[in-house]
Length: 262
Image (tube, rainbow, N blue to C red; front, side, top):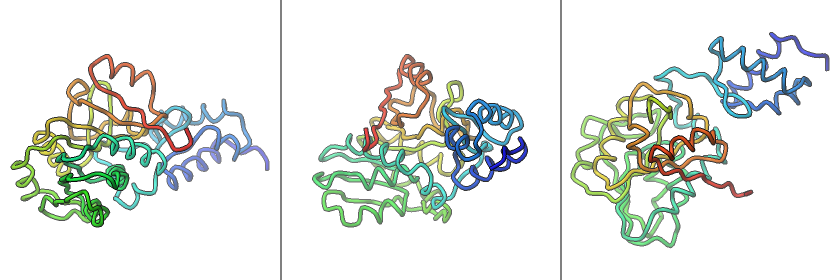
């Protein structure tokens, strides 16, 4: 294979991003038979031009503040990371608790990871997919919030989406977010979903946020909570260590999920 031109390399990188939502320097270097230094320079140039956003070891798609994957698209990306985060968060649930969970692929991994030994847990969610996933869990009583169906996320939102939430005093809310930024805090892309997250957090004694490493550096159009007020964040091992140290110094509890291979 002859060495590709810079334009051909950029097209290859964009094609891989469109397919998987993420590329690694190592994979791109191997596939195109160029040095990792060359790939890093490519990614740097493409980031300046707005084609992607660099992360540790690679890059992810560049997304606008209101960009939102469908539930189907989201469930196909970063499966191992989301499963690890889901397991770590699910391990926090105790017998007799009332918990709230919003919609999202990481949240679905959380629900699927709930221990079958749990007893007398009440779970309130606006996710149809999560309710179905827990259909046969004997120790969890699942309640749907009600509201209008958002087909793209298989979720329930306003009007009437938060009426049940406001009448419940939950122990903990497990929530997802679309972006984590040092200055802008935890953010989301859809305003209706953000209203549900805020209602769940307000009706719970504490909140646990779940986000994979690709969410760092992205800013969604709707603020959920500041870093100082977020409480707990569960993320994966590829999250930027320097940011995690900064967040911990500002009072955010960090839980780094381990993969099954660790």
